[in-house]
Amino acid sequence: MAEVIFRREFDVQGGDFLNAGRVSTGIKEILGQIGIRAATIRRVAIAAYEAEMNLVMYAHRGKFTLEVTPEIIRLVVSDQGPGIENIELAMQEGYSTATEEMREMGFGAGMGLPNIQKNSDRFTIESEVGIGTRLGIEVNI
Ligand SMILES: Nc1ncnc2c1ncn2[C@@H]1O[C@H](COP(=O)(O)OP(=O)(O)OP(=O)(O)O)[C@@H](O)[C@H]1O
Ligand SMILES: [Mg+2]
Image (tube, rainbow, N blue to C red):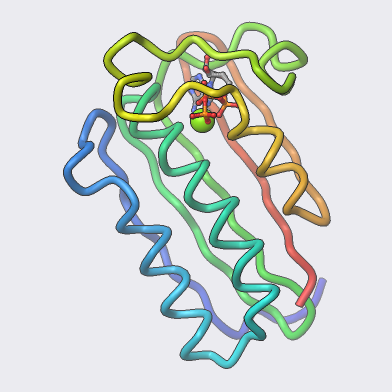
């Protein structure tokens, strides 16, 4: 595996809608400072934002690990939370368990996970009910 030239971790608190989006904005800024091209940053930023919102909406707490190698940008998003019972269903466009309150805030289209997958070159999702969820997102530079 290629050498990691940049690595940083970010904590995210479940339910914290006030700060939601800060980690993905921070990641976007860092990638800009490193000199990653705009089209690549855009894909990472979309995936990071959707993952961050899911963590805030559905999990208790979690963390993002950002790694940059000469070839890829990797995000590992792991949370402690309820987990996902049926991953195949959760990955379907339009499937959502968002509450009425979340829908009023504009979430709950059921497009987050499909969008993460679309914007990733490699995507993995693992989840254990009652334990949490882990996403592996890689975008080629
Ligand atoms: N980290 C997570 N922990 C527990 N459940 C999750 C997590 N992420 C997603 N889910 C479940 O998967 C469903 C689909 O997620 P997805 O991001 O595709 O849609 P959404 O969050 O409901 O709506 P949108 O992302 O369009 O606002 C969620 O409604 C939720 O039930
Ligand atoms: Mg979502």
